[in-house]
Image (cartoon, helix red, strand yellow):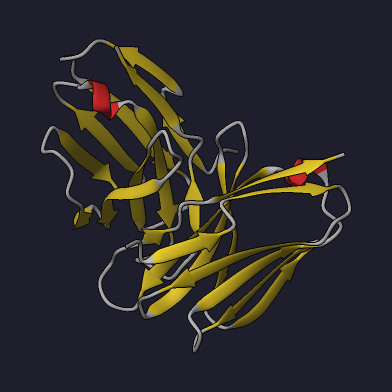
Length: 109
Length: 113
């Protein structure tokens, strides 16, 4: 079983919709990362958070440490948001990273 | 200016060959990483170096050998390439070990024929 589980695996939305991607993990962590990988392949780090909530433009990331759960929200989605979104965690023991399998988002005009 | 750069971007080679992928970061970071992304888009960490010292060495074949000549560079050398090595390899860097934002390179798509 993977230490990090994401849902859904695939998501198709109409432009303008509010989108939520979920991430659950099973280990104690020092931080959780949300990454975005565009169709061209490049990976961009969107957020790193260890508590609460962060906002950047139309993207919002939240984390609940007690429930071992994080969500990535996209408001007013746009076709350029189409990408794979990857959740990753830094455990609080050791120097490892655990990655989710990614959520492939397609936003249709 | 590119923060984390990798060369080459594409690499096509025959089975059994030896190849290297280079990575450089100009962010002044202490920690660098190599990841492998398989055909199912799953990212797996392979190696991590902090201040030129190996700190993560996952279960990868010993045909893969990272080399860090200095803090700004982490190269990946692969001996006796196999078909299963075909993947996209990403280099990344961060200010320190774990729990910090990582900056990724553009990736190197390796195809072994």
